[in-house]
Image (tube, rainbow, N blue to C red; front, side, top):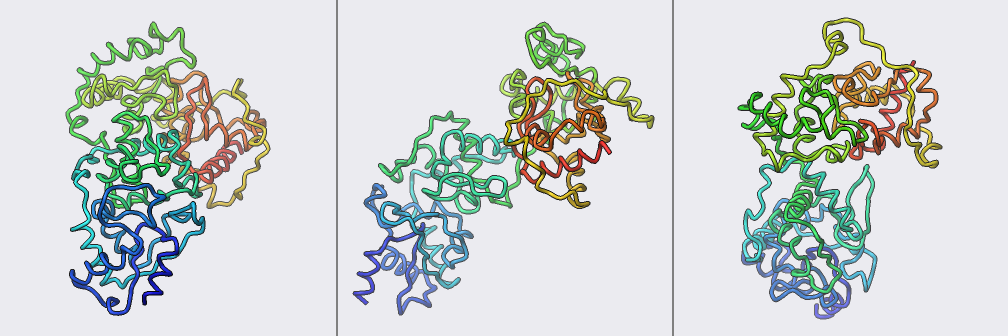
Length: 470
């Protein structure tokens, strides 16, 4: 037995918890036996008391704060061997870069040990409900994800992107961090990572308090299918929205660019390119509330549009956003073309051909063929994205249900949206060009950047768009 333990101590320990079962404790299920497993066997590799130390002084991750770090369901699943390795390399990567496999407990023992850890291995620095995610939205998570990338966190931690692993495998993966980690521990760790593992390569990012909230929320919800994102456009602010109050806000703030009557001719418009949207020619009452909320509260950049559109939420508040949207939806219902289409008349024809100065995609994109077959299934999926599902805004809102560039928003954009029914225009466009524009948007136009769409979904959109010109 002694030689067995000595051999274990010479090997690098892997993952967050490595619980080794020895004869006599395999059937342990009581709190007393759970304590024995933790104190006598886990401590072969892990520390459960003491101050934080450099990773290079440890054999495996410290557990003294594990009770406030891990969610119990994941912890039990991990202890029973039903979770993938969260370290793509060994914890002590300076000794080995090959991941090791930990031994598993029975479900009964795993539950007992998890309960012991949750009760006894706590950290007073982690305050319960230190972060409130009751008003955390899907867009907030997208902001946090972008900050996570921009601040080099993916240099060590991998996340999923388009169904593929993105980033470096140096430290813990974040594929299902929301399923694994408690939100309050994430916040405390993110506030100053070296507090937990000093002098170990842990990075302190220069983010604002709001940025910290976004990053923490992103990690706390990533992979957690049970989390329900808040939808502010369904809040009490919208239930009591007042168009009259909204008209005052529009005059004080929006009119300086969009004009007092929504004609896009405000005094600030002369120096802008692309020009402000012409609200008077948009059917605002037909536009999704979530899109209107996000573009007004968080600004154009947040939804892939021009950065000239400010984020007004901090200035006019939640109620102000609801009020001004109420005003726009009751005032701007589109021009004659939208009225004709809604009245059952033939859809107006878009420009054909269309003159454009759209930037050409990089050569590697221009040469890309569509990797997906033009099957009925793929085209149908592209149609669903085009008409309803694409985020931040369904393509039909600008390009129209038939793809002629005459959607509810189309009349208010300069230049007008692409007319996908025009054969003369579409034959000149390579699949790779269409893919690149959908992914990155088109500077100088109203075309959004669909960075959040999976590559396969964009290719399905391209397939469907091709059908519109037939």
